[in-house]
Image (cartoon, rainbow, N blue to C red):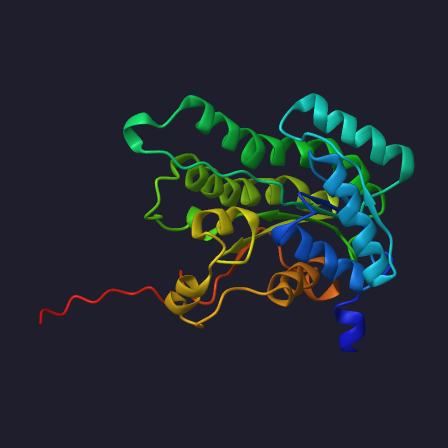
Length: 267
């Protein structure tokens, strides 16, 4: 029961959607640093290709950029065709690509609702559906393939921000993870989710002007998440150590959700 074997992901073939920045980049880096081959995808071609080159050189590993718009079925099909031309199987699918939208309740737009739901929920389901055959191809009872959905603690509690479609979409991801796990576990595909709290990212940074001081001070751990925190969880779920974990959503938030509590004292 050697620790190197328990958490070994070397040689695995991985897809990380939205893998060129933020949490997706952190997870991609974790896989590459530990010997996996990673395909990353995003809509913006130039920065995606640049990031893949940068990560490949940094970790002396294979990171391949395949630009695609996964918010549409045609985009998902196009991405699948590119992958299936290159690989006979996929070991790990990380559904990380996501969008957020904030707008006052009174004027919250249909466009803001649909954009978020399309990429955060619809895309996640149809990506998993489309890639099921490639996930099954190399899976076994002892070494199942893995699907890791990136949810959010906003899907577990009520955000103070007016991000109605985002929080609803992430709650849907958590429930969809359980539903997909029931469907796919018999095919030797383990489906789990990670619900991050505050991590340095484009999405959170835009809301905080990229100043995480207040977010760190308000966190029970007095910091925001690091690449090691999120990549470590992804590697656990992808390795022998996580092979018996199915249908779970693991929070990675420094204790925000589980230590919130209530103070009902009257001064």
